[in-house]
Image 1: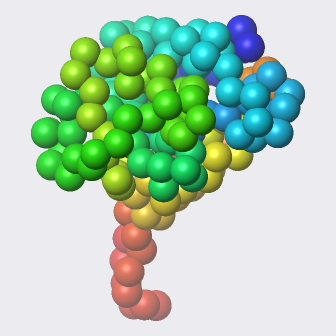
Image 2 (image 1 turned 180 degrees about the vertical axis):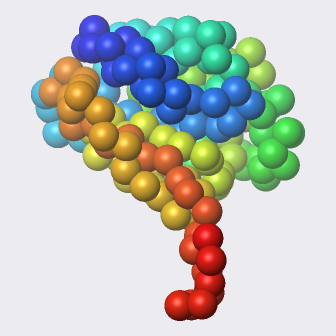
Image 3 (image 1 turned 135 degrees about the vertical axis):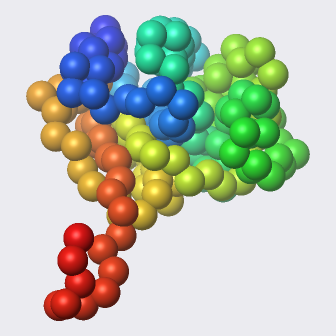
Amino acid sequence: MDNINQLLDELVAIDFFKPNTLCVIGCSTSEVIGERIGTHSSDEVAHTFFEAFKRIHKQIGVDFCFQGCEHINRAITMEKSVQERYGFEVVSVVPVKGAGGSMSSVAYQNFDNPVVVEHVTCDCGIDIGQTLIGMHIKHVQIPVRVATKKVGEATVTIATHRPKLIGGPRSHY
């Protein structure tokens, strides 16, 4: 579980996070502790991770939002100021451990002014435990390779995006 900071420091070192951008976090705390996704949510893990993301937010200025589980249609928890900046539409749900998951629930409890939105388009994302965050990252997603392959027992997948290449054989990029 301590290697969340190792992962984030590795991403800082490769300039993954940018100021004033939005990064979606999907995290199965169950997977982190070695259990099947959605079966053993851990508020302790979620609190530890939230503090780690908060540290990076303060250090770099990247905003984090947190994907809930399938029981709330993978809705996203974020600060109201971020929602307003991007113009995302707020929905009526409060993530809890059993419907939203510990990570989303802890984020909701710890943000200054939390809101939940149905869908976002983020610049990048971190998926801890195969939570399927791709739907919330700008097209075209590209993987980011890191040395830290797992956080706890959970597989880690990192993604960013690039602009779409359009046109045909005569196009120049």
